[in-house]
Length: 269
Length: 271
Image (cartoon, rainbow over all chains, first blue to last red):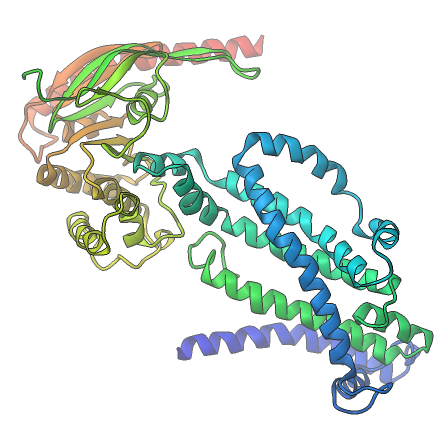
């Protein structure tokens, strides 16, 4: 108990040292006006400004201004990612166990995968209009490929001997899938979902900039540029980083400690 | 020995691997016939690449014979099934399950109750010297300990026949000696029919009642040796040394054939 708390503290400190070093340099560069402080405001000012945007103060007619944008962005990314996560994990697993499914879907995926998700934006706008549906759809497109590929690769990572070992103990195909292939594929599946969320974030922010719905972090950053409001722009960018960190360390970190790290299928750093 | 208690019977088993775009076809097993009786410990020995593991996999039901058949207790083998248990050289444990869950995997598939699983698991932990490790995950155990788990897993659901594919081949010399001694004890307490693939003559002599010597491929059974020495066996026993020499000599001829073929292959590549 005491040891794990100590470890966590050590980890946090190790993470913060490089971040702080960069912020301090940035602060100095900005305060001494080595660069134009409007283009690169000092971090302390950005933080103060961001705290105001996060607070109950009235900004542009609403309180908790930044939370509203964050919440909208977060809802959109979750919608797009979750649609992809459920359908594509299943499709990937199917491609992993069924040769025919693999040879049917693989060419399609190979063809579509290299297309940047943003290339779809103009087309999707025509289909779904300038609204949430378009943003969610593009986020979904961005998430699907790592999920499909990793789920399929995960199933294939289990050796024939693992399957044999289960078969000789009397496991039928369903049991082999549920008790051998699926848990065996876990390290790959988790990695796929991590990559997918990272890609979804990028697609989300970019799409929000193009599809200006009036809300969302991408929109906020893009709009702030019009008014040369660089502090809000940096604040928005910082929010993206913080949210990404929470998902990565909080959600996936927890999931990995509970599964692949405990099983020794992935080394903890 | 009478015919009634024949546990494993192979009748003219032949295995030919078809050629693929990358490899030439090869006949691994020419004609293998053998009988292993109930409670007998049989070792298969032969030069590497002679098809002894392939034969074991045919008995397990993982591979299909090109011709001939294998029977377990008079029933023809068509697919893998829980009348057999297997231990691989690479342990092949399930890394996401702890020791106890690995051991009871087969029992759970056969719908054993929780209490049955617990009881049987405790027994096997005791026998294999794993007590206290039931909550460990495989990756936290040494190779020798992992192989003990694999043996316990294969014995847990009480199969009629235990198949072992070079189970101690990946272990270091000391661990291996210890494992062999322990396994003799385990086997004596269970009195199971065992088919054991190895390339170590000493290992076969320490363990087996009967040693089947496979020729180089396309392989047939070149010799059958009955070892009627009491266990635990002494490597320095004159009889042990004498049989060891005999088998070694016969095995070396086959290894020689394998080497010649490999050299020929290399020459062909150089040309």
